[in-house]
Length: 283
Image (cartoon, rainbow, N blue to C red; front, side):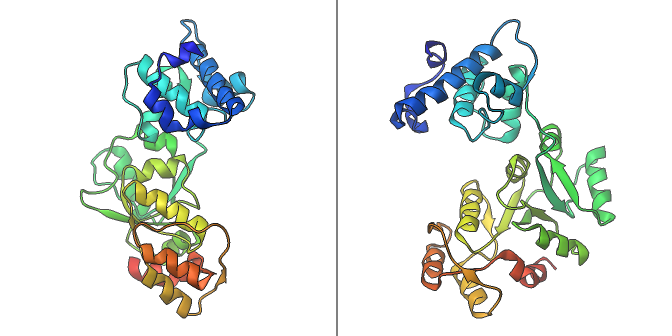
């Protein structure tokens, strides 16, 4: 533990919440990170896949994922070990693990795109434009997004993004020319990597999990698309497919009135029931 602690700043540890967790939980996370760091910094360290390393140190292939405290602790320590800034994007995290001889599995995580036409003259950009011209939906992997340096959109472009694949499918069937990104629910690693590189305007479900996704995307700079209190009220009054609103309420910082309106109405509205409205915007 001392070996790991020398790489960590006490103020950063406070920000993780580690120091106020139950002692057993905190020690387990710290021990996992310390063990992982020790193995990655060995002079004779073997090349490993991240899930293999996590299994070796914790018996769980996801123990060092980006959303775990042990994973965050290990990456933070690697920043100090290699004199690198703390990673802020998926691409940065992949690169930092690679410095330590660790390969992150990057091919299973995908994000759906339609009509994306990168402006560059490189082969990849030309291929993406060709797929768009052929009317093909593209699954972009985290590996692709981590290795391609090309601009994904022309400067100043904002791309629409949705939660449900059904919205993107209908846009493709309608031959909509405007590009569209689909996160298929909560953004995957690939989805997060794409959101970090493209300015988006996002639409999702009017339920509390959907609001949670919208809030996380809004926090990293996304605009919101038809996600205001007025949009919600209009959907409620239109008599579109509605369900009881359940779960824990959440704030909507882009429009505080939206959260209040949802609490008052107690109605959840899924994105699929608003496809015609969204396609009209895209057209």
